[in-house]
Image (cartoon, rainbow, N blue to C red; front, top):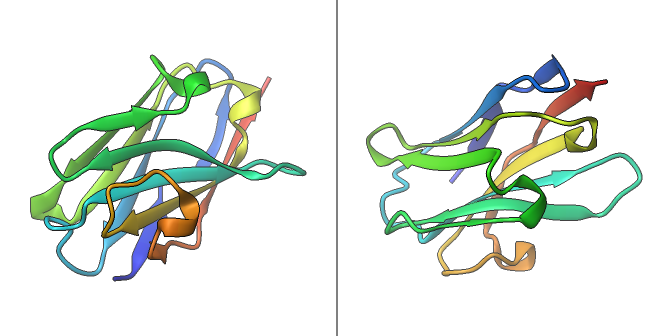
Length: 120
């Protein structure tokens, strides 16, 4: 499965962006589709995961601001990011796993990432 992220860019604090992750094949049977990010000088961290039954998991700092969704018919996962903060600046990566997991080491496939920059 190849994953391609799009939708990154420069936005002012308080603004919104929607990231998309398009898969080369069907995602219907993929248990976990996740979004991770790596900020400059920091470790990679989980942002959100959506499971095959629609259950979602969010990292605390994005709860109430970000929404993850999946469209199995389009083989695409989305990350709607609202009320963006400068601390959200990072490269955002899409990943998928055949396991019901949030752990990045258990993700099977990764995209190359898309840069989100939030200006103050």
